[in-house]
Image 1 (cartoon, rainbow, N blue to C red):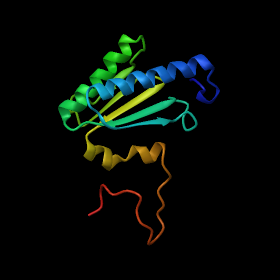
Image 2 (cartoon, rainbow, N blue to C red):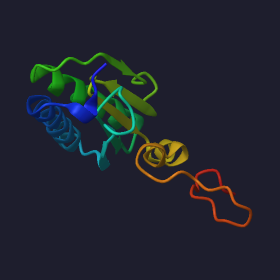
Image 3 (cartoon, rainbow, N blue to C red):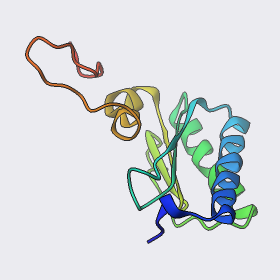
Image 4 (cartoon, rainbow, N blue to C red):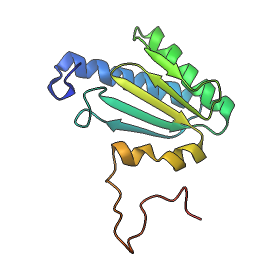
Length: 136
């Protein structure tokens, strides 16, 4: 397992190249709300996470597929790709980089940005909830 806090300059450049290729692949298929998170201090499993939205299941599938194709063309290995059957939430695992592509309602409901880049929710009596997908 790579220690992402102690990456050398070449490893950091490779991760940044993967991020750049992925963001461009997402933008090529008109992804919405693309967010890049540095997860290197949070987990030893991957260095970056990209989260993006697609307007339809067809677009979510196309976005994930375009990411896989572009990363492979650039010489990077895609370890796994999941969720492209339903198209509600697709995940691309490229080792140092994890990509989540979701429908907006799914993204809102799971709010993984808060899990990986935001603050921990507070559950104090009377405090407002930091989420809103399940509120009635």
